[in-house]
Image: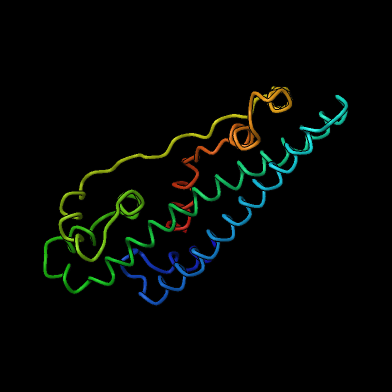
Length: 210
């Protein structure tokens, strides 16, 4: 998908110059990638739940360790997919907002907004369209309020800790002792908090500059 976006943006000096049909095509493919990632995340959740079910009835420390290692591997994969999901969602917001602007091009050209948008650097436009939420009803008011304001909504990704296996084993023991149910254990290990990382800005900047 990044390669596809690159082919769209690299031929245009300004995102506003991208044909509407090209944007819609990219949006369809991007939505598909998001749904595919969400399906994969759901499958990983199911596998982790099954492993905790198995661990609940394990009879040896060796078996616990084997299960904990599998859970860690799945958890790491889930974190990678969550990061990719956050990246794709930001690309979706960028394209969604750009689509609304293009669909209302005639209206915006009758206001000073179009001149402001057209004169924006690609970096500024990225920042605005990633963080904004506009639609056909509020486009003029939202753009009027937002132009000139740049927010950095990204946070750095957390680091992996060497104690992962020990933490998972402690969670398994808590499940076996009845202190946690499996759904809670899955939530603890899977770490449902979405990570928003500044890699997106770097990736999208490369796409627009090349």
